[in-house]
Length: 334
Image 1 (cartoon, helix red, strand yellow):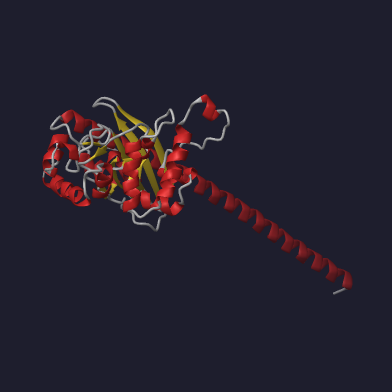
Image 2 (cartoon, rainbow, N blue to C red):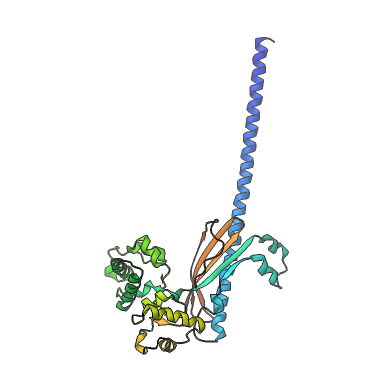
């Protein structure tokens, strides 16, 4: 073969190799685009499905709370009522199968891998940070004393409480003199946001099982609160008294404040006279739901204000992707 023919053969081979490389590149790009489109569509579908499932779970919780008030069996809220029973993780298709009005096999088959769990928590089983100060910037000394008892019980430096009270009072003060300087911190709505007011993350972590932030001042429900919260909310009670109340309510929930006084057995002065200190009824509830849809785990928290049997308002909702390696069951707090 001549030298010229050899060069032409080499050029043809090189051209063929370049053509194959280009075809492979284009095929790979097309395959990647198709894969990407499928993933985006799957993610959007999972997002929409999780949204309407969690919305349905919230509506279910509202219905349970509405029926609880309409039943009118007693005027107190306690942990023996239907709303306080947590929903253990269950396959969602089992609920659809139990619904005789549901005839859509496509829907049932579409969510065979969906698992739902959740619980309703009495938000007034916790001490309300909002009680520390009013919107005009005035502090509530009785509430500060209650939080001081909690800080002492948890072995937290009271200096952090002083910082919390001052900054929270400053944040709630809506007067012109306070807001004109634009120095007031933002008023927190979630416990995690208390770090804005100077609390350390370690302190917030210690306080989280015992406190909450609600839109208005609220009383602590003795029928649902922990012994630590009851002890801190009533200055005349010892920890032994608080633990005894928790034990007594398990056998028979308290129906009124006089029932609590009678259970303590030391006269009416043992319970604070402030109606926003202790109570046996609740208006605010936190709803927690957890959805496991194939490999996606979504958690949602909502705050509900039960104004009446016919008016139940959702104040806020927050949703996020959970760690898929965590337990699928929502944590149960009783």
